[in-house]
Image (cartoon, rainbow over the protein chains, first blue to last red):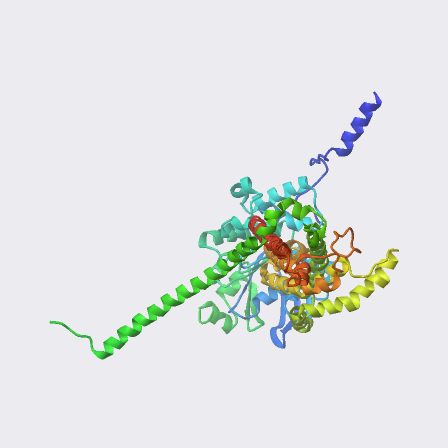
Length: 287
Length: 309
């Protein structure tokens, strides 16, 4: 072999784009280390915002692989409880918290730095109003993986396809993955948000009235997805629609003025409420 | 039978018509005022062009902007040093002010505690409202000696201190309050939902800023920078005081320069016995006008490109 050939070979080798194919073992759903203990429990939680007592002695434990619905009238602290679970309350000013929120062996309230981002990865959020990030459809799903260090295009391609299929969006968007995500319909956007949250492999999904901004058909689709997803995820959902809670809840937490009044398996709470407040709320006396 | 309206009805009728009349008059008045401001821009451009026509008839456009000799008494008008002076100072000022004000705005909106904001905002407003002569004095008293006694010797050069660098720093400092308050406005307009969406995926605050907040406010950022550049281009008094005013194209940061606004301010009304001299100064103003115009138009085009998200 002449020197020139060797030279050109090595040059070609140096400048060739790495053709990374999926030969190395890579499981789409096992990208990140999974904590061994994923129980989520709130114990004696008190929360104040600027001296207003928002959550009062809240103690709940979230069952695994079930849909837990938090119901209650407006302003009773449902959303705040939800946002405490993944520390999004940090964005509010003047927060004071006491009590314990445990994710496995980890205390969520006292978590700092990289622990918080790891908790938020493990406890995903599906927002009330679909909120696609200002990027393409592809990048929206890939974003979570990118910020957690997965940057190889071949891997991301697989991930994006997998999770778009999981929320039933792949067929609708596969021809325009690079189009801006805010061009989708509102129902599609919400499913995209769901795919985005699923892509970082959370153990929990927090849904804060995730269907309230959607039309009936889109919200039915999301509901069906939740029912399907509870095989692999535990879902905590705040809802204002009792019908929705009746349809899909396995476990119900009823809150009133910052307190948990009653909690238990859905059919018990709905069919045989113990507390008079729950009875009144369920019969539509107040909302 | 003819029915005459009662006096009450007549008054009512009058007032009803009067109401619509007022609406019409207001609409037309506002249209005329808007049209006038538009006309003002056009008339300024035309006026400057007409005033600079004599020198354009005497010299070719290309020779005017490419020649380096500035000797009005000998009928030599080369604008190259002034154009370069303006370009150097402006680019330096923006390069200096942009990163600082961007980081300041990010800190104030995303990281700082609210009480700090309460103190910093009024301070920024004061800084933005200071007359530029004060910045000029500050530059001559502080920045110019600092450059001549510290910066230049440490680079083993000698310099009077009246340099491009001094102009860039002073103009940059002047642009910072404007840019910071514009940026803060932009960042706080980015919906909290976007931040929470990114945070909920496990992004750090810096990642959220980088990928979401900056991305979302990019069109606004560009518009803000254009505004700052336009202001910097036209800033006169401060640069006049610190730039050295030497009609030679600067070759580096430690050379003196002579930006166009300083040229006009220094010489207008002085030697207007030479008819071409006045025309030359008007031509300088026309260049400035033209650059600001083109720059704004160009930014419009860029803005249209980036607003798709």
